[in-house]
View 1 (cartoon, rainbow, N blue to C red):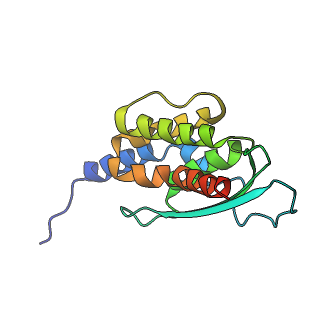
View 2: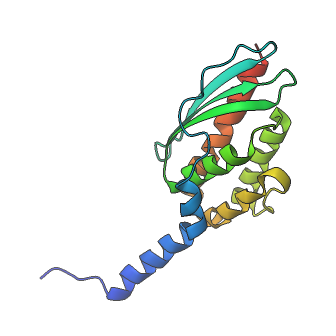
Length: 165
C-alpha cells in the first residue's frame, strides 16, 4: 500500500504559495504596461534605440526589452516581451508602469535597490519605483531572485546599448 501524505502537508504547501504569490503580485502580473513589441519609431532627431534579451539560467524565464530614449537620454518608450513566472511578470509590470521618463541612473538604481531588498533585506526602493515593495515576499525564495530581477537587468542593458550609439 502506498504511503499517503498527511492532509496538513498540502495545506503547508498551499500557504507557502499564498505567501509567495499574494494577490498584489498576481494583479501586477496580469497587467503589464507596454507588453509586446515597441511601436515603430517616428525617427525623431536625437532618439536612440536599444534592445536586450536576458534569460535566467535558474528557471529559464526570458525577458526582452526594447527602449527608445529621447535626446536627453530619458526613456521615451519601451516594449516588453516576457516569458516568466508571475514574479518575473509582476516585476516587469512595475517597470513598465513607472519607467517612462527615467534615466539610466534611475533604472540601474532601482535594479540595485530591488536586488538589495531581495538578497540582503534592504528596504524597498522609494519614489518612482516604490511599488517594487510588493515583491518583498520573494526575499525568502533565493531561487526566484533571478527571474524577479530579469526585466530590470534587461532594461538597463537596453538603455546602455541605446546610449552607446
